Image (cartoon, rainbow, N blue to C red; front, side):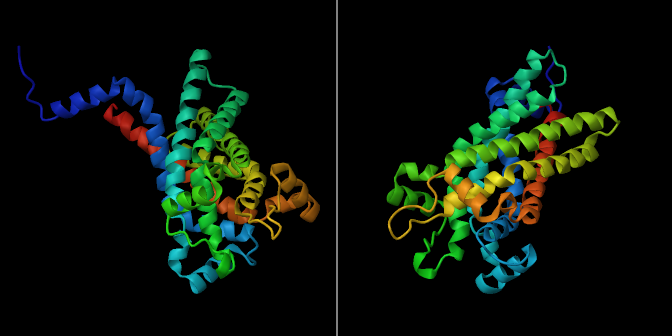
Length: 310
């Protein structure tokens, strides 16, 4: 018998052990999804806080709001809630992209490897978004509260020092159930966003492949299309979710909105259907790039692992 003296032998054994490892196969789509979402969040965070401020009543366009924040509160304010944003991606995006990958793999097996029809792609996105949102709801609530704090009068500010402080303060004052305020709306919004994002991304990739477009151009084009549909389908739910999560008790102890339906009715009465698309340009500029960066980073991670044989 001969022994391998290749300097790559230990590396090859590690890669082979990963490729055939059942635990790695199970964990990989979730880990890759979380890493891609966290990477995108680090890039997009300033746009997110501008979007929240506009939805909460700030006047002017995205650039004037951003300029005002920097002038009055400092540049670092644009990254308020980054810890909560990263925690949200580590929970929500890890779950939604991991679950989506598992559902798509299952459906492909059922379809004998044939491309999935659009209705199945939409269903996979809806299911993954709803389930992922359940895991991410506490971090999402913390993020909204931290970003909205600067819009409140000084006496009413919560002054959270970080996501840990926000989570413990919410539990202390509102109980564990307080972590899931607006969770049903968050789930519906996530279902709409993921249906638009993931179904259109897969469909666009297939159409581009049929037309000879592959590799990074296909990833870029499909992710741009996915970003638009994610924004279009999810903004009305995002608007209602933000209103529910940032509300504070009235002097009589009641909340301005009793729930999702009540918020929808009152918003419709106050501003009509277009009120739900308040801040659409900023929302699109925030959601589309985040969707694009998430999908691009995810594709690069998958491609790198494939090249390594993992």
